[in-house]
Amino acid sequence: MRRICSVFVAAAMLVAALCAVPGAAVKAEAAAGKLIAITFDDGPGPYTERLLDGLKARGVKATFFMLGSRAQSYSSTVARAYREGHQIANHSYDHPEMTSLSDQSVKNQIQSTNSYLTNACGGSGYFVRLPYGSGNSRVYSLVGAPIIFWSVDTRDWSVLNTSVVKSNILRDSFDGAIVLLHDLYSTSVDGALSAIDVLKNQGYEFVTVRELFRRRGRTMSNGSVYSSSKPNGTDLGPVQKPTVTDEAVDGALRITLKAQQGAAIYYTLDGSDPVSKGKKYTGPFTATTPCTIKAVAAFHLNGSRSDTLETAITTPTAATPVMEIENGMLTLTCKTAGAEIHYSTDGSAATMDSPLYQGPVFLAQGTAVSACAGGEGLLTGGVAWGAYSTRGNFIRDVLPNQWFYESVDVVLSQGVMSGTGNHCFEPRANLTRGQLVTILYNLSGMQAGEETLANLPFTDVKKERYYALPVAWSYEQKIVSGYSEQEFRPDRNITREEMSQILSAYLANRGIAAEEGALSFGDAEKISGWARSAVRQVCALGLFSGDEKGNFAPRANASRAEAASVMTKLCTLLGQL
Ligand code: ZN
Image (cartoon, rainbow, N blue to C red; front, side, top):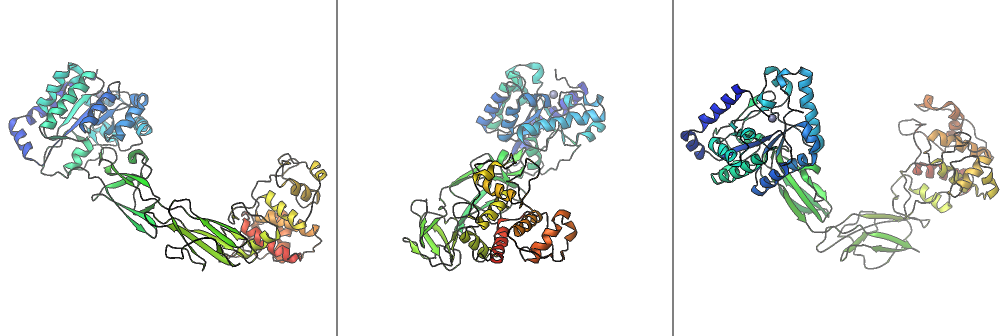
């Protein structure tokens, strides 16, 4: 079935015979370590999982030259072989005689198989073995990968006998050999596993093809042909597992991973497999504990990597404290049992050196407070912040040193804008059309009746939503219009020029005459025609201004922080402060 051309068989057997002479064996024993690469072609098949079980039990790594057509039907087997450290390689899509194919067909055979292998296992860098060992310089140059032949031909596909396969392997193996087998046959699987036991007792170490060449310090190149790597006095040794060190720095756990020179490290922190799910390590990082670090060191994940390091770091990180304030009394809690809470009211970030929290604390208005938790057997967790304003608002995500703090405090106190829950304001969030009309409705102190709602033409404004009455009122007052006769798009972010247009209509509604100032913005020509007059008005009134580059940014979304700033100015203009 997998007949190879007779000339090549003869050549391979000659090589095998030469290397099996007693003198060669003695020399091999004297070298640093005897290495051998066992390879399986034409799979995966029904016996491959059993083979993988046997290799795993023996701690042996092999190389699988797979057919793309079979990798498709046995994708979980491909994934398992890769995960368990075997080298996955390419044996064409459906085993054609490559020399008879066009350039494009040769490339298709290789590339489609590479894709199926990657889909199955997530790997890369697949070496190639040509079907029947048949190739020429044209085919070699098209393959785009190192081309692997063999130096021990077991003829397993022909003999189909466990003990003959075993004895053929034992008869011809030598230090640096690449052994050809086929995992399509039960007799090949059993013969290989029996031979492995004997060879291990003789001191052989089983490595992937990639590792065989790395260990001997030999570089491999695309389009070159390799069939063995005999002892040359160099053995770089197996890829060492990475090492891990951890230390607490600024309350967090800092993790450092190290591998031998030239090896990359891939790791996970959630106990998942670092080969298929790992991130490449680029330097020390902080981790939330407890966590399980799994890491491998690799010269190449596909066939040249260490065993997996696994370390559980059990020191827990204390949770970030939760702040509550009622009538000026601050209460701090931490859900981590046994954690001490420390807090600061001087505007600095709390550390474990800050005062210990021992019960509710009275906060003067205008105080920024921070807190963190930690203590014996715990890593210090994150810092919680909050600001208790002179107007009595407690806000967790807006601090006194931010430009919009005062405005946010004003609009909250005036009931013009409300927070987003849990003492947050979300200043960076975009303002929506529904939110803007609700703000203007609040500012007017209007109470629209249900009958207003009945006249609303927009099908996307649901009557139970918070913005239903504000949209109905502002539509009736001609402050806003819809996107179409049926659509208002209440959840759409509002741009700065759209907001200007609505504010201009609102000012007219409130009887405020606005002059039209000059448009001196660098990007004035980008302001839409329909919005130009409105932008002139709102800028002349000082409600809006340009950014630090002198641009108006008409199409930029307005943020909730900007809205708070504009509304504070509008309140002043309306005499509502
Ligand atoms: Zn084959």
